[in-house]
View 1 (cartoon, rainbow, N blue to C red):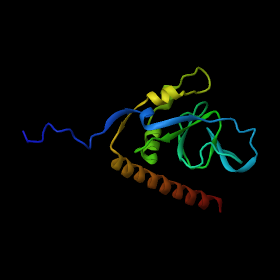
View 2 (view 1 turned 30 degrees about the vertical axis):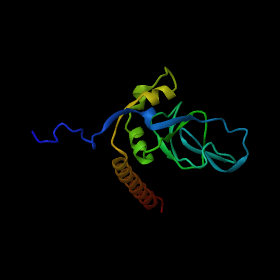
View 3 (view 1 turned 120 degrees about the vertical axis):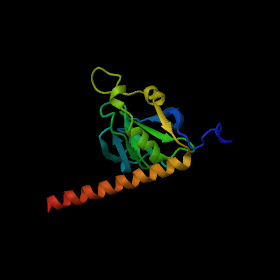
View 4 (view 1 turned 90 degrees about the vertical axis):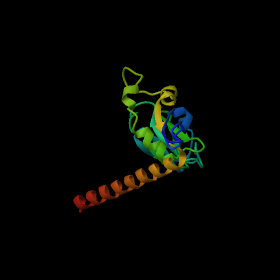
Length: 165
């Protein structure tokens, strides 16, 4: 056997709980706020604009608490989320783009806790098992998927413009 055979592979992916990687926070009602430039998001995406933010400087991942639980998306600060949308802020040394990839690859419908409207809890999100590499590899993977998402969006816009002209 080679001399370093028993050494731990530092590039190996580790099984972790999502709650170790992100801080899942609750959205809140926005009806008491005034109209403004801060976007308000729900499970279906953008809803309106208000004058205050729940997050002024931390980008996050939006994931439905009720309704559309299987379509997580990126939230750019500043933003507000309604009470049916959680927002997950990456912890230190966790790449947001990589964390978004993780969220998009969990089968959230299988974790549905309701008998009617699809529903998730913070506990279910936090206890979900995922596999994670070290931060440099997270960054590389996150950047790759972020570029792919941008390229897909560009081609969708070109396609849509071709058929609307």
